[in-house]
Every structure is written in structure tokens, then in C-alpha cells.
Amino acid sequence: MAARSPASRGGLYRELRDGLIVAERNLRRVPRIPELAVFAIVQSIMFVLLFAYVFGGAIPLPGGGSYKEYLMPGIFAQTIAFASITTALGMVDDLNKGILDRFRSLPMARSAVISGRALSDLVYNGGILAVLMGTGLFVDWQVRTSVLEFFGGVGLLLLFTFAMSWVGVWVGLSVPNVETAQQFGFTLLFPLTFVSNAFVPTATLPDWLRTVAEWNPVSALTAATRQMWGNPNPYAASGFPAENPVLLTVAWTGVILAVFVPLGLRRYRSISR
Image (cartoon, rainbow, N blue to C red; front, side):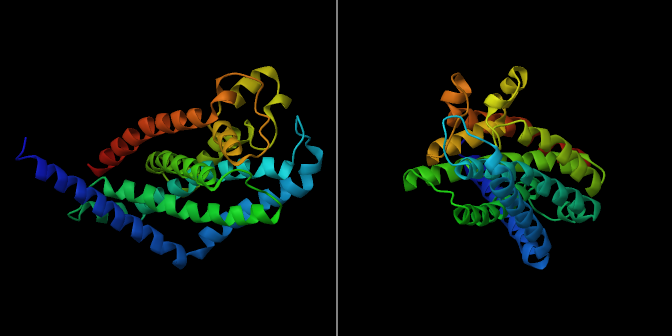
């Protein structure tokens, strides 16, 4: 055992080092193709302004409270969920251009290609979240709890971002082209984000749909950040999702990682043969 330990540590170090190198390579593309970040930010800001100023006055909250404060955690959760499309597009683009073949010909850890993609998209989407939070302050969103709880909510968002990146890795390696990845992502994520408490209280939904919305991972993340930031949170009267949104978010994140990390790695190995 003692003889294998240094090799084991060396292998782990190599995977981490190579993953960081690939992540750096992916991030270097952002200033070279600024349209990617610009359109992602503009789209999210449009959602903020649209819901805050066009629909906000028509959506009353049970128990009262500012709809703008209610809205912003939902916008953050929606942005995080749709981040997986960015990952999928990046993976399928690299695959079709033969970049993954070039990586496979190099003396580097195989897992670095996809772990590097997940890490780079974590940083990329963290920057978009920072811009959105600035926009939220512009429309009178406030954090009414402590600094520690604020960063705890940010940590939950980033953890969920990392998990959704692995969904994007699997999708990107499973579809034939960028167009299919985009259509598949939107088809999957629109119901996930809109059948949730991100924009409207779940109490307004039919009973059968309300149950789905309350257990939705986007609803759990949204309710968790609202709870941690002291924003209006008319989630549900009772039940596990209402009483434990932070725990449910962590559980959902663990499930997503447990499912899609192995699927992504297996898919990458299959196309490597």
C-alpha cells in the first residue's frame, strides 16, 4: 500500500493540473468571442426587467412582500439551470471540430477534458451571476440577512452550477451538432424552470402541478436562496420541500452529480475508442 500511495497522489495531481489547464484554455476563449458572454448577460437582464417592470405588478405574493426581491433568486436559479446549455454547446463544438481528438493524442489525463470544461463554466457562470446581482440591486433587490448567509446562498448557486455543467457535458457528447444540443437543452430546461416557484408562487398552480413544482430542483434552489437572503418565500404551507429547501437543494445536487458524472465519463470514453 505504501508503494502505491505516491503514484495515487501523482495521478490525482496530474488530473487536477490537466483539468485546470483545460479550464484555462476554455476561459481564454471568452475575451476572444465576447458575444457568448454578452448575449448570455443581456438575455438574463431582459428577464429581470421584463418580469420586474412588466409582469411584477400583476403577480401578487401570498402574505405580501416585494415581488422584485421574490424574483431575483428565481432569475439566478434560472440562469444556473440554463448554464448547462452553454456547457453542451462547448462540448459538441469541440467534438465536431476535432479538438477532443487532439486532446486525446496528448499525454494528459483523460478526465481533464470534461472536468476542465465543468470548472471553466463554473467560473464563467459565476461572472454572469455577479452581473445579474448588480442588476438586481438596480431594481431594488436586497439581501436582508448576514454576509455569511449571503455567501452561503452564492455557494449553493455555484454548487448547483457545477452539477448542471455535468448535465451539459453528457448532452454535448450525446448529440450530433450544436443545433440539436441547443434545442434539446431548451426543451428540457424550459419546463424545469417555469414549472417552479422561480416566477410565481406554487400556490397558484393546480394541485397536481403544485406537487411537481414544489419538488422541482429549481424550486428548491430558489426557495433556499430566498430563505438565506431574507427575501419573500411563499413556497408551500408545509412539507419537506417547504421546511428544508437548503437540504433538498444539496440532495438534488448530489443526485445530479451521482447520475451525470458517470454518464459523462462513460460517454467520453466511448467516443475515445
